[in-house]
Amino acid sequence: MNEIDLINRIKTVLNSDYIGDDCAYLKDLGIVITQDSLVEGVHFDKRLMTPYQNGYKSVMANLSDIAASGAKPCYMTVSLSLPDYTVEEDIEDFYEGCKLATKDYGVEIVGGDITGGDKQYISICAIGKTENRRISSRSNAKVGHKIITSGVHGSSAAGLKILMENLEPDKDLIKAHLMPVAQLEFSRQIAEQIEEDYAMMDSSDGLFDALYKIGIASNCTMSVDFERILYDPKLEKYFENYKDLIFYGGEDYQLIATVPVELLPKLKDYTIIGEVIPKEEDCVIKLNYEDKSECINSIDKCFNHFGI
Image 1: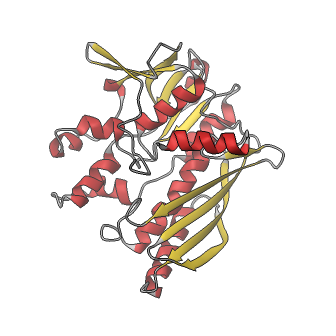
Image 2 (image 1 turned 45 degrees about the vertical axis):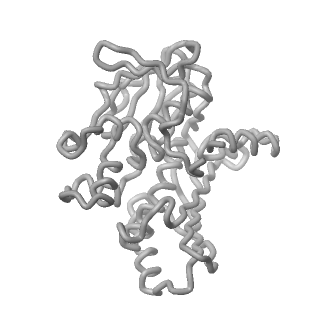
Image 3 (image 1 turned 90 degrees about the horizontal axis):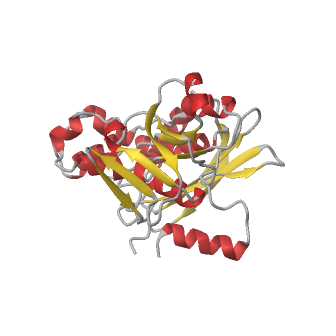
């Protein structure tokens, strides 16, 4: 069972219209809300990052979910489960990192919970305001929409491999992994100016993952020109499989959106990587590279949270 199948089963059991996007849009309250859980040994390795970096990145991941919805982040709660050998100074450093991640965005951490556990668990709830913004959904991609992204792709995955394989350090790639930045300005530009429904996700689980989930939810084919995707040229120096890192690597926290062409002149700092086309049989993503096209209809290469 993969994550998509499990979420669909939960949605069926609960009979909920809210489940499906990374943020639930509570229109009657004028907010979006998201919950993210991080497990030591699955989502982070304390040997590769400091508590300060861990706190910063944990919060930034949740800010990115709010950004992907189109809302403005406002409040967070942070809950921890800690083993009994935890050093108090490490927890202080963790929260200093959390504070750094929020300070430029007017976001306040307003509470949480602390319990014991066999390893470190982090659970963060984030709330964003929707006033004067159109909220996205991964099911809102329309035929004719341009597929646009922020930033470069593959850098975080490259930084992680450098750390794990003890390769020659590159400060930019390592920083991309340990200290990512949520694309809140990119989100704001779209959400405040767009006049029709649109899809948007972040690349926390990879560019491919976001494209695939939007295509499935919107029942369309995402036609993508690989050679348009921006990446740090240093990836070619380090890795023969750098193209896999660009397309499948996670935790860049860039945004991927489908928008009408009329919106593009109003935006800054974006890259067009493709177009939404009518659904083709057995083709969620049509990947165009050089003179070839490959139809992808499986999520097998994506990160599987359960390893099953």
